[in-house]
Length: 323
Image (tube, rainbow, N blue to C red; front, top):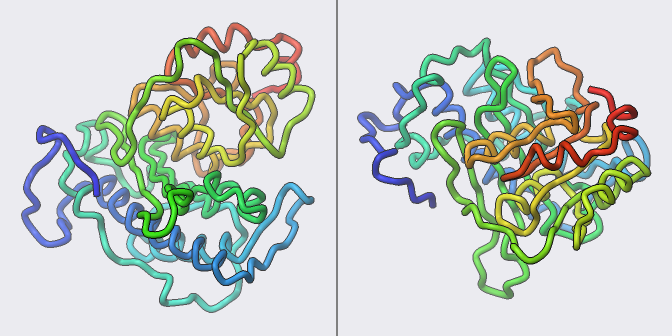
């Protein structure tokens, strides 16, 4: 599925490549797991039994797809990497694990990559995996399927270093017979695969922001950027992909609504491609296992000119949105 440059390849000495560094094995497992989770998301939608419940209001929903996809991801990874900390968006349930949701395979394409030198000796206790099993749940329930992503982010000593994103409905508007869904992954210092970095339009300024969680702070920060166009869409993963693929110049979200599981995977992939994701003050986000889950300082993601966007952020917004 992924075309890696020759310089990033090496031979796999044993089936499964059990001698590969922990980080590489974890990303390889996450790619396989994310693809299975994407299938679960599609299957639940096709069944028509979404099982929607409200968690903290009408803009914070959970579906059977959220629950089943998280079970798939967390249980599959925890069985393969029992000493690694895994934090998922959804609360654990007492339901019996559906064995058909479990994945044991590793992506051979990931295992062929050369792990960056600084990540080759990562230990289990240094790693936290942040999981959003279905980013863009509200949009999922409303049929805006291209907004939906499955996010698995890997942090080492508090820093987002690797990410896997599955888009279950990528290409779904192409008609019958089209290949549905895609999975992309990236490691900082190695690059990103399954997605192509594209340059946004030079003749107009485009910003993307929230579709469902806007407020005056968000509005004031967007207006300060003076964009020609604003794309209001769901899902943090989706919005960062808009930046990566040149459909937007920046993702601006000047409010505390976003969580660590929303940003870890997209940040790692964006960073692997040379972009930046910080809070609206320019501070790096922290992903230690004991960190508070909300990104209280908001989110700013860009591929270029990051400091310019920071300089345009109104002081009144910065004062209101504290890290």
